[in-house]
Length: 236
Image (cartoon, rainbow, N blue to C red; front, top):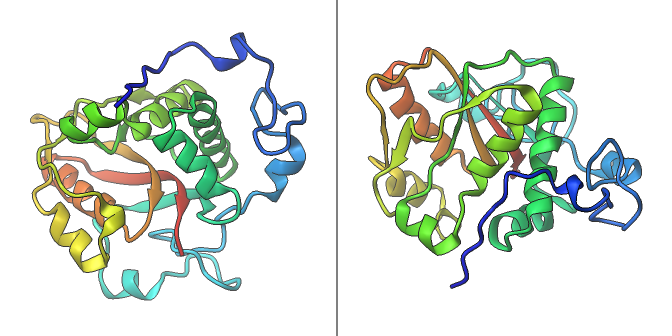
């Protein structure tokens, strides 16, 4: 399988920003025009803890049924978009096709949303790690590449070495919610001493939240006092 090597050079150094959705000139240095940006499905009507989308407006601070029954080990999950409309194709292109402009765009969009919501800045960004076998197959870790863009946009440190994936688990997309939870038990390990009190886990898509729950447990045991989750999208 062909490996993709990502460059740290800004894409705009080589090509002017062009909207990846309609071909119009990009806006604000991004490969996205203002019109298409406005049409993307922001995830702002959602659970205040895990970002599960709600179907209709709710009072600020409302929790979903699952978070009311069992408090998740992370403090708050924020996702920029709902996983619908154009978002699946953008995420898929960044994750599986090595489209560097989409990796950069998703990181920029996530940074814009972090700033728009006035979130507290963590001491470091922690990308969800890939197992070395999966990393060799894919050639890159999309969560790490998104985190690097976030780090540049928000002037935050990225620490990809503070945790590792020690179990080569089957892809989560093939499993139901219960199987996902079983699949991830003892999948991660954290560096000791951990070194950060406030971190933000970075991922592309939150589905059942099994990955971020398990990773948060590991980081909490390692000494993290506050754990946020920043992801590009959340499924219903």
